[in-house]
Length: 160
View 1: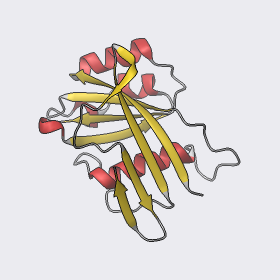
View 2: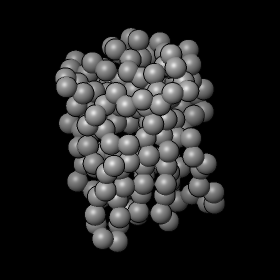
View 3: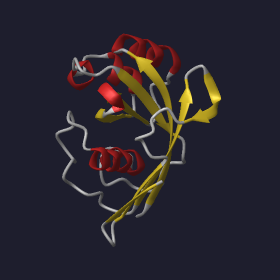
């Protein structure tokens, strides 16, 4: 089933301590969330998913604690989830969004999904917000496209 996802990203948080403090103070532990760590020159180094972001991000996490990570973002999937029975543990939109972004960006700390194309057609629209201004979208990462889409039938990637 083709999936379209809108992700509202919040950040940047400079340093893991500031990131964890913001997540602990501002996030519900039942949000469908993606998170990412960036290194020098805003290169995406790690992308992860969680259905309990406070627990996942605020506890030990080797890939987030990696020394070259300097900037962090957390994103909430704001589109309605896909209804019906699940074939896997994770919601399909969350799982496909993570896998698609990992495949597209090829983060060095992600060891899975970097060589595997998404299992269906996927479109991910990203909006970025400053944690202090939750109403005005902005685009602090020029190398991070607003739209990443994959056409499973033609095996083509689109970005915009």
